[in-house]
Image (cartoon, rainbow, N blue to C red; front, top):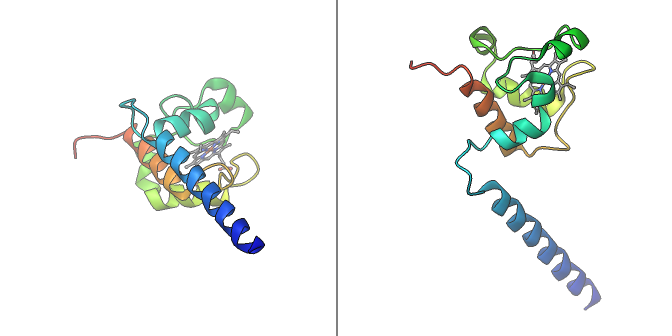
Length: 118
Ligand code: HEC
């Protein structure tokens, strides 16, 4: 009996967490889905449109600029992989902060900075 109610409570919590996440994901704003997680987690270092501010370039000389040349070398999958694993000391893993889906949305979003017509 006791074990059953514990399982039931866990299920309720899990559903609740899922529902609030879903509600957040479908916010009424028309912004691309990756914009909010980008603003929250990446913008301070990588800049509003993927060009790091000077202060960050000085602090992290190796920081990436998300321009056309960058995306010639980095697929969406490779970006997701970097977000999952991190790179060197300053580009941390985001696996505690972002779900895999959010990483994919952020990867799509940074790619949109350089989207051309082709
Ligand atoms: C504390 C500052 C900081 C934050 C916050 C940050 N980055 Fe970075 N990022 C860096 C630095 C520094 C590098 C360069 C790492 C290196 O090559 O040593 C980098 C590199 C990258 C690269 C290129 C890695 C490669 O293979 O060359 C990608 C893609 C990237 N960041 C995406 C993101 C995304 C998306 C976010 C937000 C979820 C984010 N970063 C948050 C500092 C940051």
